[in-house]
Amino acid sequence: MGVLIVSGSPRKKGNTEILLSVFDKELKKNNIGTKFISLSGKKINHCLNCDECIGINKCIQKDDFNSIYDEVLANKGFVVGSPVYVGAPTSLLMAFLQRLTYVAFNNNRPLSKKIGGPIAIAGESGQLTTINCLVDFYLVNEMIIPSSTYWNIGVGVHKGDIEKDEKAKSYIVRFAQNLAWIIKSLEA
Image (tube, rainbow, N blue to C red):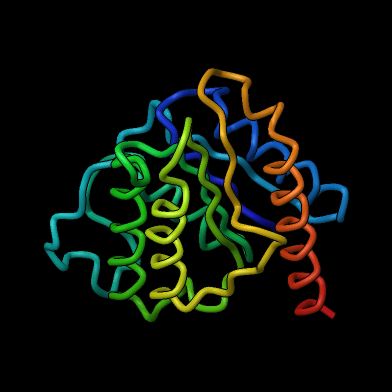
C-alpha cells in the first residue's frame, strides 16, 4: 500500500501538479509507492445526501467518483493538492472530498488512520484558508496528518512559477519525508 496523490486543479500540468510531483519524487526516494490522479477532466457530481451509500461503501451516482474512492481505500496514504480559487480549494476537489466523507461516514469510516494532508498553491494569498479547509477533511475522517517545517503551501501565478519557489519545495519535501517515516514506522 502506498500513497494516492490527487490534484484538485482543473488545469493539467499546472503549478498544483508541479508541486505535487515534488512530493511524489520525494516519496519514491523514500521507497514509498505512489499513484497520481488528476481530477481535471473528471466528472465529479456534488453529494445529494440521499443515503443510498449506506452499507454498500460506494456512491450510486454514475460519474468518476467510485473509481477514485476505490484507489483511496487501496492506499495507506492520501494527499490532495489544490490551487486557491476565491480563497478556498476548488469546488471540484470539495465535491470529491465531501462525497468521500459522506460515503466513508456511512460505511464504518474506512478513512480512519490513513495518513495524509493537503497542499495549496496560490498566486498571492489564500493558501492558509485553503489548507485549513482541507485539514478539516482529514481531521473529521480521523486521519493522521504529518507536519513539515511550515505549511504545505506555495506561490505561483503563471504555469511553472512554482518551480522557482524554493521554500515551497522544501516544505513539501519535508512533508513527504515525515509522511514516509510514519508509514514505515507503522509497517515495522
